[in-house]
Image (cartoon, rainbow, N blue to C red):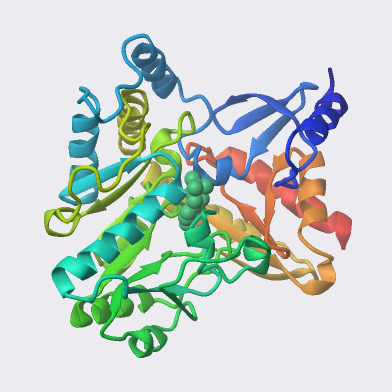
Length: 401
Ligand SMILES: *Cc1c(COP(=O)(O)O)cnc(C)c1O
């Protein structure tokens, strides 16, 4: 079977909820992936940053194999010997006191929202059922009905209502808008340190700190969704470190599973997380020993291979390289660490055709929204591989000019 056969079968039987590039991958190693026809590509998406450690990282694969033979799932009805150790290591690494494990990012965001509401009723005395949570325009926090209830992207919402009430949307990057939106019923402010899915939107410097100070002053939980920005992608273990702030609640996922297995987590203080009582929230697979063992190794790799430091220095190198490309179609090249976007002008005719041309040149990139090409290779990428990638990007822009 070749690429066309697989595409035909997928389109016949698989729901059409994605619009993938026409490449069918069957193998990956580090930053490289191979398609079923044997062609090799540099992965510049890293599974939306779930593969920060690189494809099939040998240490993480070995740990998965060992644990798979030993114990994989107990449910939280019983305890296992991996979850306590992951909980401790995660809290120590990120500087928190308690953590709640889930599987997907969206579930961890839902956990943070439930936590904020319960905290507001118990600790702030907001009347039950009336808490409000403030979120930002152009956010991406996942796909559940509650989460899309505060999305501002029509495509994510259309014909999926009725929606969950209790959310207020304000512009991103303006701390004054947050100050104005707060009422006595406000429980929390949910924000992405960088809006990755919206097209690598980096807020003005000082914004997160200002917003955090406002939350402190008004006794509102500052919840950072670091599912994509966290664990090294932008050059720090958490993006919020750039502004020297510690969110009350932080949500992580994606590369916590080393690209092998879904696992996510919501972290907070003992005081806040302590509002959850047995039976109030949970997940069958959350905290399973297989995922926890993999996550423990995935975190070790991030630290021992200094992936945040690599992202910071290689990201700056690659960003500066990309900025030298001259094209009448480029509006802006921006990024932090190895989360980089090239925003195209409207006359470029959309980022999709560029991604298709990049694919032919051996780079797998995905357009975010219509006009941004995202570059987010695994953090194990080498400088010489980024040099090569830059040559390909330059060539593609030359081709279109
Ligand atoms: C990917 C992502 C999510 C959702 O994670 P899933 O695992 O797809 O549910 C939430 N927030 C941010 C910022 C993300 O990038």
